[in-house]
Length: 637
Image: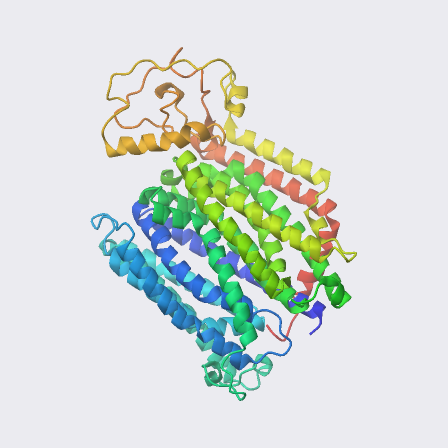
């Protein structure tokens, strides 16, 4: 199969996956927004952080290394040995689910059963759901390796939708079930997902006249089960050694991917309610990454792995394949940079509005806008890292993968340290700042590898990270206009507001009777715990609802509202209104102001995209040629 044909299949896989995921994710987005209004923050924190961490850790450790190794390009592969290797994910999953389940039940803090009932059952069922999902791993690898375009997206999307529908039904009709609801929904999700793959391959292998069936290395469903090959060898030992190398790397990558959840779970730096808010914002912020960047990364990893040979540098491979890979990498870097910049620039001014629409005051009035604005910057780094690492992991030799593991070890250690320190200093936003730092380090390592890989060739794919000055100016202008449209600045203090510093020395807070700020009360303690974050971050990120006249400079509630036991004081000289100018965002001015703000953003977005269309002609040509070809009929679809 030529490199151009592989490229066309990868583009088709990415584009089809993108369109279908957008459609299905919109449905689940609406369902989740509906469910969110019936749940407490504590339930969300336990399910989305504690239990989903158990599930994701089990599946990641059991299968990620096998996926990387078994999808690597091998012109002559014994698929029976590969399938035998893949079935080892099931006993590994059983081991990890039992071990981690014991840790979750015996070593971690158990939530109050009156607030979050049935925690133990939830741990057992989430671990079981991970093992059930691993039963479909051989089918998943076979589908990905032969680029069955719509199977993965349709199966996963339908499973997610049905899971959301089941969750919504149980939340409305049986709310007293507690964690039973989410545990049963998760088990249903993984069971339905595996059944989709089994039913598809059963029908496919039962139709000998099918074109797809003729391209598969198996002819019956029993061929997918583990068995001894004709040579008497159970697995391909070169693939097994590569799997072990990737396993060491994947273990470290999991710490980097889910590091903030490990810190929250094992170090108790946030309570369950704060964990719930952080996770909601994190999922909302990563929605674009899952919809756009993940399908591109997965599809083009297969492309690079098939076109390039691991054990050879660029000068020792077919120059046509090297040139095609360089051109694709350059275009993907440009696309990732443009998409990430668009999200960063426009996400800053629309974070609070998005959270208010999605989750109401529970998200938009607290630390949520801070988190989402910070996450927009992280999305830019995610986009670039996804492209650079998909090339790096596909082109690295086994020895280079082993050396890279040591780098990942250092990054993992630094990430955990930075997460703990930054969270202590500035609250939950510290997790995102630590992620940004580590993602920058990973991008740097990948860029160094790409530069060395193409050093002896005339190709320079890293030129995709350069944008025209006109386009950069359009981004800067759009960011400024949308920020101004969101904020109504007072006449006397815009400079102080934008810089986050007073124009004159801050007045000392008027004396308060003891007890107004220092109440021995859990709620008040919680408010003051957030004060360490709110005071330093509010002006930096334009946090709404600063009630300057009712709070002192060093005891400001991050929600802009008084903590319990803190009566308001009249506005006037010395009350704080001269120190913090009053700020009203579009969310406080009603729906007409919101619609105007959205219209301004739509206009700026159209101008920015038009500028990109006129200046980045090489990228536009790549998208037109590859993704228009991907829409043509193909025998593998």
